[in-house]
Structure formats: structure tokens, C-alpha cells
Image 1 (cartoon, helix red, strand yellow):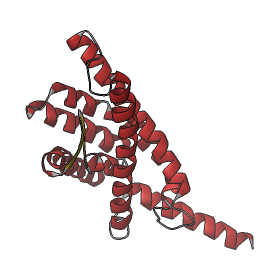
Image 2 (cartoon, helix red, strand yellow):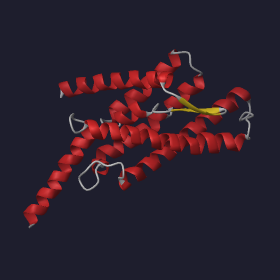
Image 3 (spheres, rainbow, N blue to C red):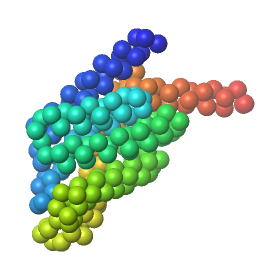
Image 4 (tube, one colour):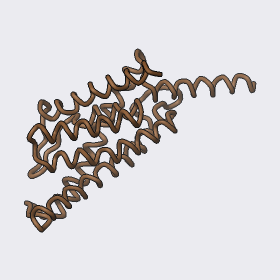
Length: 207
């Protein structure tokens, strides 16, 4: 048990480091005034395949990292909202690990996982829209002035754009975790495989 805790702590620390580094080195897609960094959420999404505790630690760790690195406060606040979807998503994976496999195999064309991904993407984007809107209302006394208008900025760029960004990053994380699970113990995938073997065993016994 202690070894498992140390392992999870080490993994969380590595993922926090990656979560802070990726936004600094990866290319950005800029659609003024918003920008989207490819793979910026991948470490957090990978953490969700380990446990809720690891996911929360990575969300809080990256938030702190952004805060002390001198980035705008609103970026750290957006990162802090990740605790919400990370906790919900990680808890769901703990209770339903079988959704990471389809017919006993890992595949990106996994309908159940992609539906789960869409729901998390909506939660992810909604939380960021709310925190940016609240930040601007407190700081500026208004939602702000943007090219294309307020609706375009909040609901098209941050909202719809945020959902797409979340979907892409989670699929990258899903591919990485699914590939690594063939060689290393990634708890959610390990549980899913165990459940699959139990189902196959029960079917054979019934026959």
C-alpha cells in the first residue's frame, strides 16, 4: 500500500512538471484574443487514469506552478477550475473502468469513452467560461470588449473552442495511456482488463 502511494506521488509530481512545461514549449493556435496550446491538458487527463487523488494533485500543482511563474492570474484561475472536471472524470473512471475498452480492446473509436469525453469537455469549457467572465466582471466591471463581441469570445472561442481543445487533448492522453497500459500498470486500464477477463470467464462457465 505504501509503495503504491509513493508511486502515485512520484507520478503526480512528474505530471505536474509536464503540465507546467507543456504550455511553455508547445505550439499555440491563436484565434484572437484566445489561444489554445496543443496537449496542455494531457498530463492532467493521464492523471485521471490513475486515481482521483492523483488527478486533484496534478490540477492543484499546475495551478500553483502557473501562479508562481508570473503568468496572468486568470490563467491560474482557469487551471484551478480543472479540479472540477478532473475529480468528476476520475471518480467516474474508478466506478466504470470498462469504458476505456471496447470489446475488450483499446481503440480511439470507442463510443462509450468518446461520449464520456464530450460530457467532460462541456464541463471543462463551462467552468473556464464562468471563471473568465467572473474575473473580467470583478476586474473591469464589465465582461470586457472583444473583436467579434462578447458572445463570440465567451461562447464561440472559450466555449465551443474549449470543448474541441478538451476533446483533442483527452484523445491524445487516452492514446498515450492506452499504449503505455500494455507495458505498465495504469490502474483504470488494469481494472478494465480484469473486469473483461471476469466477464469472459463467467461466459465460459455458463456454457
